[in-house]
Length: 244
Image 1 (cartoon, rainbow, N blue to C red):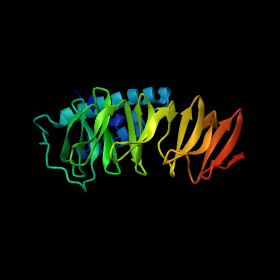
Image 2 (tube, one colour):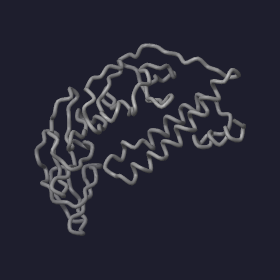
Image 3 (cartoon, rainbow, N blue to C red):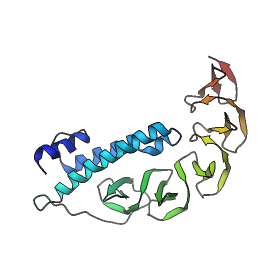
């Protein structure tokens, strides 16, 4: 590999050629978070774009990593046990994902096909297309049984098991899977799609607004924007709907 080739891989990670490997690792982690396909589970076009971008990022990082492991610059990988209060980040090595702590020490070995950031003590991981959750000790806290899994928010996570529903931190259903599409919990409410229309549930699974909207955005600062029959509305947390 020439210096020009290596420089191009650094450029993919938005770094100058020859930047320290710690910087390359940090830049790679940041970009993976930005371009992770799971952020767009309900948007096929954006998900595919992220998947292609992730392939480019992975390739660039692997090339830089390989160069760093040459005899001239080889650096041993440190390993140590994970601790419950560790701040862990996903990392990719030879096509598999694991987790490292803030010092770059491997705490959860790279055995997963995908790995998301930790949220509320758990992180979504997958093997062979099945998703579940690990804790910071690296143990499976929730079995690999879902076809997709999102981050925990306010004690609930959006998962797909045939259809979309929400589980608690114990892995049990809080809102059973009966929706065509759904969004992560925001501000104590969930936007869900049923029979072609979007509505709003609270965290107990009770309707705040019955399905009626053609489009519905996540809640932000106490309200969500929605569209029904070509008109725009503001939807408030108490279920009030006002034309915009």
